[in-house]
Image 1 (cartoon, rainbow, N blue to C red):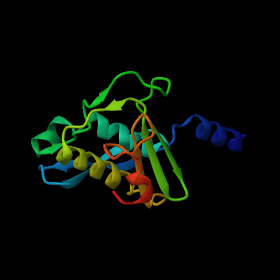
Image 2: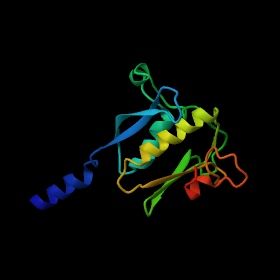
Image 3: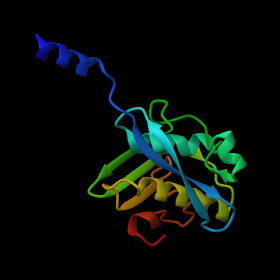
Amino acid sequence: MKELLIATVLAVSPPPAAEVKVYFSKGFDIPGKVVAVTRKAPDRGVARFAVEQLIAGPTRAERRRGLHSELTGRLRGRSDCGGADFTVKIKRGVATLRFCRTVWGNGVGSDARVLHMIDTTLKQFGTVRKVVTLDKDGRCLFDQTDAGTSCLTGHE
């Protein structure tokens, strides 16, 4: 009976929240300084949660400290992923983040800061050695070359 009670409590109890770092920009250098803030992820989807936090941006108190996310408010149009803003997959040390909506750039400096925030945020996870960030068409985010593949070859 005691084992049944313990199993029931474990089955009904929510999983503990995981602490995740989200790296927001501070200042406007290129690629810029990033500062970590801690968030509590509600489930095991910590990479997804961290990117969602980059899109949501810093809290009011964090903005007063000079932190900002140039990804906030930059997603436009319809999602081609059933309503989701992005997908993220981690395989063999590579995190592939593909946006499902158009991400509007705001110039070379801003674009570099966005990529730096994403890269630093996802590389906090031990399973991620490299980050590939793609736009909704599968091209490297903000890559204006004909091929659009600089992030795939590592020559960003």
